[in-house]
Amino acid sequence: MREPIPSHADHESHDIAAVRQYLTGFQTRIADALGSFDGTAFATDAWTREPGAHLRGGGVTRILEGGGFFERGGIGFSDVQGNALPPSASAARPQFAAGRGFEAMGVSLVMHPRNPHCPTVHANVRMLTALQEGEEPVFWFGGGMDLTPIYGYEEDARHFHQTCRDALAPFGADLYPRFKTWCDEYFYLKHRGEPRGIGGIFFDDYSDGGFERAFSMMKAVGDAFLHAYLPIIERRRDTPYTERERKFQAYRRGRYVEFNLVLDRGTHFGLQSGGRTESILMSMPPVANWRYDWKPEPGTPEARLYSDFLVRREWL
Image (cartoon, rainbow, N blue to C red):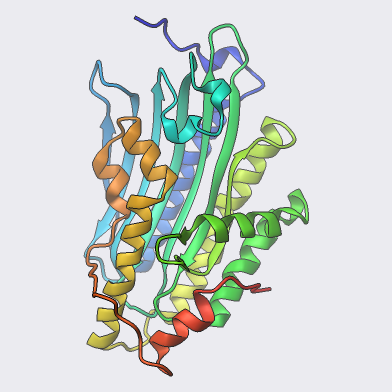
């Protein structure tokens, strides 16, 4: 049997308790704000791993289904520990693949509005620490946010990207273009040859400037989320829609499912490490469909999504 994973409390330079406090508070703030917007409170589902499970730890899932505005939304906090990094985390870090335990904590959210003119949004902030008895922990932060419109509005896309750039500006002018490019490349359905949405920012393996600076940057991204998303859904919430638009929404949601199940590293990490399946897959939309070789009619709003929004471009 392995020796217990060393305690983070032994490493004062890495204030893991402060990260945990920020993440749980972040989850509560988002649930309160979006629940108030919807008019429906998020349900709370706290969970812990069974003794002897592959993973130790637990988390809290905040879930809203069948709300007044959101058809489905989930905000999950997890804090889990294990004896070996799963392949999705260690593939790029072979020096950590053997003999290191880990602790992973983060908040991940996906919101699926009912109105097709209101975009789906995803955001995530997280920290992973690789642990070895007798050695300093090796940490890295990750996260970001991205927007997936069904019907595109340039005003919304510019606002979302401007908020992302403003959040990163105090940490260096190079971060927004770097993280935007990373987002464009990550949220791309290679088997379809198309982006998942209009992007945003994405970062992983981030520890530049040491623990406190990297942590501050992650917090800035998390704190920008409501500023990026709420003005968009406030602007679009009363836009009329028809059954035709709902059908297109379900079709585009199929692409969201494909990305999350086939390509998303977070999904793979959770499933490979023995995570809680219900919490991992809460990002799935409530309704999605697939049509064989379907193409939008030229000149329609559906065609404009492909020509003007599902392309890599500069929004600012």
